[in-house]
Image (cartoon, rainbow over all chains, first blue to last red):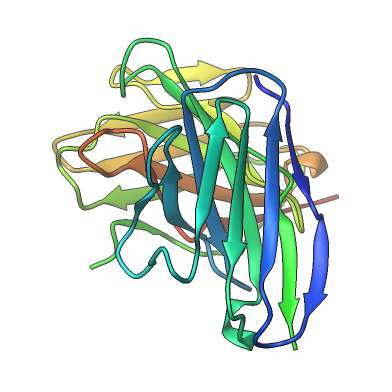
Length: 118
Length: 111
């Protein structure tokens, strides 16, 4: 499976500021996603990062709050804008590798970025 | 109704026990099913994909019942190192690649 790294691994930020999280993959991948995991909760998909076009956001998430870049097939960034304490969460990058369609597909996660907003 | 539902547990079992986790999903169009394992303060790691015919990987057996929209994971001969949260995961969107996660079932294997 692909090796995924994220930077920063953790950060403490003041409300009203923005943080950009980087995700680097050691091989070219078609599919990249951003998830968040709030304390005590499971993972929620924020958006699909599309290379060369705008990200596809899930219900409840908007580009102004979570702008995403995907300049190439190995790198993506997620920005958490105008942060509030409710944005405190773990943000995870993931990549998907398909072997023949949705029934032959695996998804792997980066180590996550633990964000605390004060 | 949540898209993926699991019993949150916790399941406390002694070493060597057999334990089963269940999961139901609401989207009948889902095509891909997985079990992930998440250790405390770590990212989820893929444990196994779940195929229609059922599949086994060592001590782990996964079953899928499409008619009932039900997935299970059986762990035999539990080890201390199996202690973790087990996440039931189902694909959910039209493209088939974005995933919906259950809240997870917590397992603690004790000596």
